[in-house]
Image (cartoon, rainbow, N blue to C red):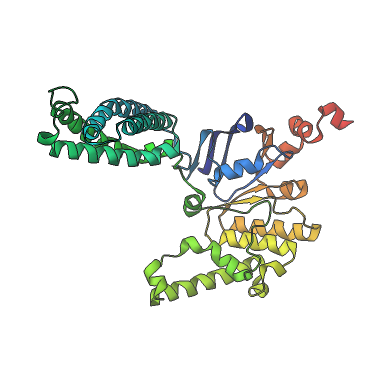
Length: 395
């Protein structure tokens, strides 16, 4: 069976702290995948990487063979470094031209000289930030490129009126003409490169949670993230937002197509509430629901986005046995719809009754994988949970 979700050698570090290290797993369509491990094992961090809240430090994630975490281009990385170096070299020629054009006609010669030196230092810092893939340097670079293009065009159109270098009879046109042509060609190329997807990814423009949800991956969180002052139905309709096709204009003017679409979405959300057993509470405030009902409402909201993969982060936490049993049946019903479910859970009775395959994390590393029966008897799993050797655990 071909996997719908594939994780290859994912790692995530926060400074010197490693939260995930070399985690590999896969899930097929219609499977229930359990992810267990002690507190701090990296389970929620893995979910955050899968849904775009975190960007992995290493590794790749594929959803239906589409990369959620694309491999960063080494070619573009080298190109950005070379362009930053060329930008700094052109700055060395920009400075004397800027200084020579303005200095003779101003009374503030010292101030202008200091300003030129300051701009040169700032351009060097921006170029250095660009080499280090800082997003602030990427954004400011467009302003600097615009300034260089303007100066290059101005210089090329005023070659005859530039005059000589201060204190010499050498015309500034000998510098302005080649610099202007080079600056125009280079900055046009540089501007285009900075806008390319492969280059933007180097500066942190990657697939975000909204795009991941549009792909077909939805999730719930460890803590309730409901809009407690909105109705139960409105909470579910928020989850269906990505399915709306109506644009800004049709929504403002309430066109027939927009009203028809909204009515259909509302019917679909009511059906989703029926599916999770909350249809009688549709018009109650979400804050008035019991805890177990709020957890089911979160699942309904996630399902409203019509996902193919559903991630549940400790859905049974805080539930009594009756609520847990009802949750287990709900997750099986979700699986029967053909939706792949990944579930983090500390309640071993829930996870062992649900999961087809279980992955075990400990200190950010994958220490075991297999069926519930295999995991139950795995020495590494027993040691991770009990904090001692197998012999000690058996004693």
